[in-house]
Length: 515
Image 1 (cartoon, rainbow, N blue to C red):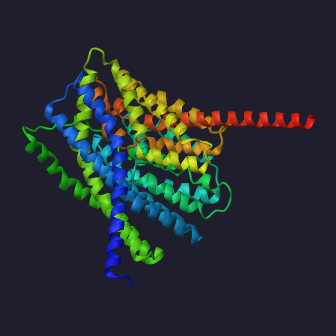
Image 2 (image 1 turned 30 degrees about the horizontal axis):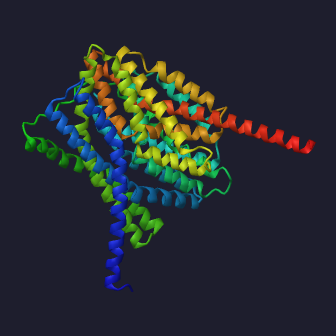
């Protein structure tokens, strides 16, 4: 039995480690938010001045986002990832298919409901109740997470599944109102955010760890890709059952006469989002508690650590949603309207590309994916090459999204050739690159895309007199699509270099034999 002073020392060490990790997470969040904040400040002091109250609310919102994302990602690492790995390994060890199906479906639904990016998108979709949209998306993720897990267990090639379901996706788009198309594809992008990605990838690693073949680790990729398809199909089906689209209502600007009134705006939001987040996270906590009692039976210390992680997640999500809804979205929408109203509104395109480049460079989930890819491929795909490829893809996608906002070109003109090219390329690149590419599409469309770039596009579209629902929505979908092409192009380049190196080695061997 440990002495009291030893227990105090242990708790102090743990507290110190948590503070250090939290500091790292806040620095990651800082790197994610600061570039957008700097761009907004430069624009607000030059070509697109913001009202003082709106600018101050944006800055307070940025601070809440930084702290909230830091706490949230710490909670995801402390609670969601360990739960995902242990649940994935345990349910596959049971060797019961019905367990994999049932647990996989429940996990997909439960985790998606608490996804912050989805909550942000749902509040911006006109004419559809938040709960209805979130519920449809959650069911879609649940079904496709089961499909993704079964793919790993039965060793089914990812490219075949992608072809079948994307044919189904584009077939359904011919039967639904145009208003829902961009929203459906955006739903697929926002679902794979900071809550679901760590959990789903950990679950994939847990399931693949049961297999002993050499392709097991590679097959752990692709879960994010398949879980991005489920929401698209779910929202398209919802559009056929619930064919209603409301009128877009511009985001209200913060109205505060002084600093106390400004803080009151945020203070009013805290109870609302505290209640919403508690409702979202309660199913995850209940699921873990039941799984712990009947299956996992972890030690008390590990259970306590996971419980603390869930609390971190709760607090971080409350701060995140409050900062987004009160500070970030109004500033993004107003800034888009201001720039679109300029005589030289073509600068929407380069500004959007600049934002896209910095957003993906600073996205924490992207860094996690880059590191995992570099480790699994033993350095064959360097993290720097991955990062640059993603940045180029996202910058181009935001530029094209701004072109859509200015011209009203249908999203079909970009998505159909883009996905067709990505699927064709999948037959010519190594399997690992295809899985990574489609996973990257979901990971690249992170928190900043839904919280700032989508309101920015909506504000610009409104000022230009376009249809916000058909022309502004689709930003997230464009961000999720272009990495499919750029990463697979990286795969073609890698394959070409590998073949040249093999040919050169063969020539050298022949020369040695001749000697």
